[in-house]
Every structure is written in structure tokens, then in C-alpha cells.
Image (tube, rainbow, N blue to C red; front, side, top):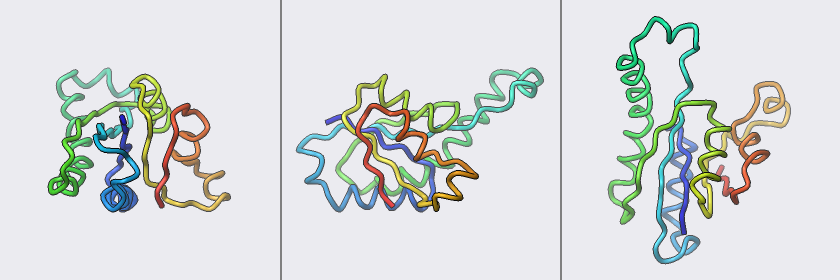
Length: 140
């Protein structure tokens, strides 16, 4: 089973990883994990003033802040995930990656916003659910 783990470094990501570790029977004998973090792009009017190497360094630094805690959480687990970093709008990028990578399952943590705050502020989870054709397991 190919599983995409969408992570943002929050406590909700940690809860999702802990849930995954506590329920290995859900995923079969040989799950294949890809850990994905999405970094928000620098606005286009700014990128014209920054060289490509500096910009890439910024994206890598932002992603590593998220992935550092994920690697620490997964260090004592028997899984050997691959790690992916993408730049873009989080929800759209997660949904597209799940589809393009032919994943069997997408797992992500949810902040559990109320319907009103989700409507006002938006929700990555809600948008992923609306646009993703891959089955999604949300852990609160």
C-alpha cells in the first residue's frame, strides 16, 4: 500500500503519526510511505529580486523546520519513508501529489476548526477533501 503522509509540523501532524504507529494493522504488511510537506511560495513580485539559489535555500530551510520533528518522531519506527518537498498552495499541491503519485491513501492531521472558522479562514483539510480523488484518512 502506497501512503502519502501530508505533514505541516504541527501537533496535529504528531497526533496523526502517533495514530499511525498505534494502528499498524490498518495499513497491511508492507506499507510504502512518502512524507510530503508543502512550502508556501514567495510572491512573484519578490522572486525577481532574489537569485534562484537563495530562493531554493529558503524553501529548503522552511521545509526542514517541518521535517526535522517528523524525522525525530519516525526515527524509532520500522518504516523507511521517502521525503518530498513541494512549493505551492498546500491543499492543491497535496491533492495533486496524491493523484499523480497513484497513492492508495492520503493521511493528514486536522486542526478541527469549527464550520464558521473554516468558512472564514479556509481549511487545507476541507479543500483537500473537495479536490482529492485518493481516499483520505484525517486524524484529529
